[in-house]
Image 1 (tube, rainbow, N blue to C red):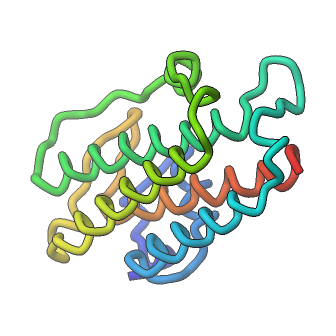
Image 2: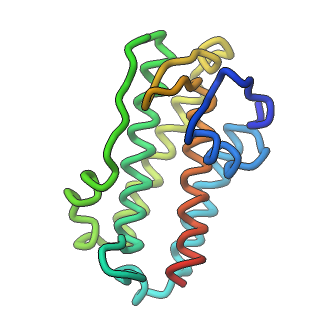
Length: 171
C-alpha cells in the first residue's frame, strides 16, 4: 500500500498535507526507512544547533524532536483505537501545550533519538500486526475522517515535514 492508493474518504483536512509529504513508498517500508533517515540526519546536525531558536518563541531542534515523538504517540493511539473499530471521535490536541510542558531541552540528543527509535519500532510492530481490513478502518480525529493506514502515512509525512524545517530554518 502506497499513499497515492488511499481513497478520497480515508482522510481530509490538514492530514492531506502530511500524506503528500510522505511520498509514494510502501507504508511499512517507509516507516522503517524514515526512522533511519531521521536518526542519521539528526546525528549530523552540529551540537551547537540543538538548543538554537531561529526566532523568539520558536522551538529548538530538541523541542521539535520531542514534538515529533509526542505526535507519533498520539497518531499511533488513534490508529489503535480505529483499528479496533472504536467509533468514538477523538479530539485534536494543542501542540504548544505539549511543547510547553516537556523538559526536552534538558535531555541529551541521544536520549531523544533513543525514545524516537523505540516508539517507531513499536509503531512498526503494531502496523505489521494489522490485517488489510483493520488498515482500512476509518475513525474521526480532529473533526476529520482518517483511516488507520492514512495515519501511518501522516506519521511519516509529519516527520519529513519537520526534517525540512530543520534544513530551512535551523541549519
